Amino acid sequence: MQDRGEDLKSKLEIAKQAAFQAGRYVREALGRVEHFSTKSSVTDLVTEVDRQSEALIKKLLRENFPEDRILGEEGGIEEPGRGGKEGQRPDLWIIDPLDGTTNFVQGLPFFSISVALQRGGDIVLGVVYDPNRHEIFYAHRNFGCWLNDKPIRVSEQNTLQESLVCTGFPYNLSPEEETLLNIQDVAPRVRDLRALGSAALELAYVACGRLTGYWEWRLSPWDVAAGKLLVEEAGGCVTTCQGEPFSLSSPSILATNGRIHSELVRLLSRR
Image (cartoon, rainbow, N blue to C red; front, side, top):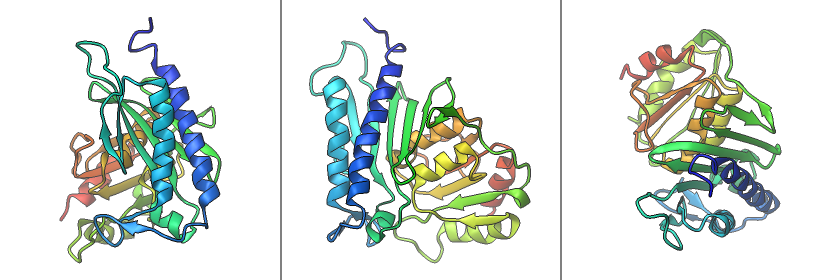
């Protein structure tokens, strides 16, 4: 019988398969969506593609790991189909079946599928798949971070002036929004600033060095669970915008190559 450490490799392979299957479905649907609805605000979109992508991922996870729990953006949390081992809290899969729905609806090919596994309160594996570039980012706790089977590391920029930094905009944006105030402080001090629209993929880009840093407020666990692990296993640093330890319930996330982290914390904490 496998112990709870030895089974992670097999779980990672299934997570990659699930992301591939969902990504293929989502990519084939790009440009064909005619109807969508809103959730928490007019900028919080959901389509049938989101729901079907989540169903594909859940089906594969359920077939292979019926004792695990699943938390999905569209379906909420599902308890095990049949009981786990006595005295052990089942592993929790955290999935975002289409991170970047607004981009997808607009036909903008920057979105991703995110699958993470939480064990004992810790994210132990994460997968982020970009079906448009056929790039799969994945990490296993204490075993590094990979892009299409090649190891990756965060960037080596030492200063903000050298850094390409990214952010995102929460739903229900107000004129006093922290992000808008942060931009005023950060934008003049970095090489350039981007907002790309897929938190999971932006975190993956920090992990592989395409971005030096990324921050955002008021995200959900499925937005960041996999990406957080990618950045950490690629040698980066993840905290809140105030520099406090990050958890999936934190109000903000700041992920960097580590070298510019303290400078960004200082800027993001000014207001």
